[in-house]
Image (cartoon, rainbow over all chains, first blue to last red; front, side):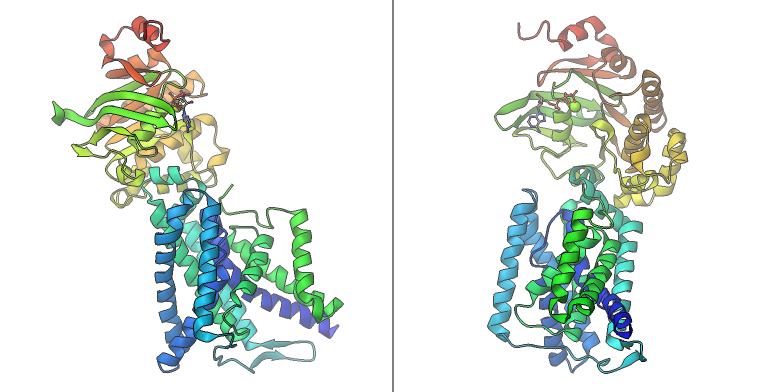
Length: 290
Length: 243
Ligand SMILES: Nc1ncnc2c1ncn2[C@@H]1O[C@H](COP(=O)(O)OP(=O)(O)OP(=O)(O)O)[C@@H](O)[C@H]1O
Ligand SMILES: [Mg+2]
């Protein structure tokens, strides 16, 4: 019984982190109908940036994170402005291939500089437990992950739903020509959206870097997690990402509890398959895209 | 003469692949006028409007707005100069509320400042929209959608308002109401308006100037009160054309 409760709680906490990993992918899909294959690699790229800047600027992880966000926004401008915007008008498939190429380029660059070494970002919360009873242990890191992820997703939801910028994004997602007719430059809007997605992915990169650690190729694994989260929650639904993260996290850890830790990932994705059969559009449908 | 022209279209040619949809179309829209463009299904009316707004790119010809060449410019750029289109089939943002549709209509920085008074203005023009302000556009009736499309186009505080087939699929009473609202906007605000229509009589009645488009060519044009309804109808149905 204790172990069951612990698995459930850990699953929810893990789900918070999963949501942070998936939200950028969902945002880009919701706005431009693009499955960004480079999502995981970009997330890991931000983990590497944070690591580099922590070393370069005297060890402050907050400063390193701030610089990384700015840098990732710059990456977003280049990626969307110079690559994806050029092909997105020809449909989602060419753009998807572009992001596949970008993913491979990022892997190779990271491998060139860092080989296959495993890294972890320093984490001041390591070893601290917020709750520690016979029933359950709640590590501070896991609670921190869930808290940050909640804040990021609620903030993003607010921006998309309630601000003029968010409404412009939704207009462009619904119908490019109609949005242009409102005077909205949709190419520029896409650039902003990609920057927003990469800024949130940097948060994912920070949490993942502190919690799991990373190496040159771990982007693919995080893409798969993000994909699972987004498909369960509903492609393009921001709040759905949160739900998707929690469900995947809980499914994995309860799967581990019932069937043994060796199959927990498998159980997670079987749950995904079952949910998809029952509700192909994902739990919370989608934001705007038809 | 040119001083009085808000927009001039010169020898516009537009094709979809091998199919040419517009042939040397030329028109002039004087400041403050209501201009109607009359044409049957497939005459090329929407093609013309889309070319004017940069949604499709003409392969030759020129569109001038307030003395500036805007041919083939980006749609949002053209809109930011003061041209606004209420698109065919009153396409509105379905998943947004009526209020949000109007807010997005005032996206341009120049329009954002006047958002409050513009919104009051369009709500007064179409009171039905005010009642439905917080409902999603999906739930509007056909007439209300059309009103919303026009109201949204007015939110940007345009100098030229273009309406593509307001009457499409609407009951005559509703169409009459909407037309009267548009007439009011023209009279009170001096806004230049282009109305695209299939109905000959209504077009001539409500406009100062009319053009008749048949199979991609302008076959008639001039002051509406000088155009003979019967002659327009003949031209419209292509009876005396290409003889
Ligand atoms: N995207 C397109 N691709 C190919 N041909 C098109 C396209 N859009 C329109 N056409 C063709 O161009 C011609 C003009 O169409 P257009 O929509 O401009 O006519 P319209 O006068 O607006 O008609 P309606 O009153 O039905 O709206 C038609 O023959 C139409 O079939
Ligand atoms: Mg048409």
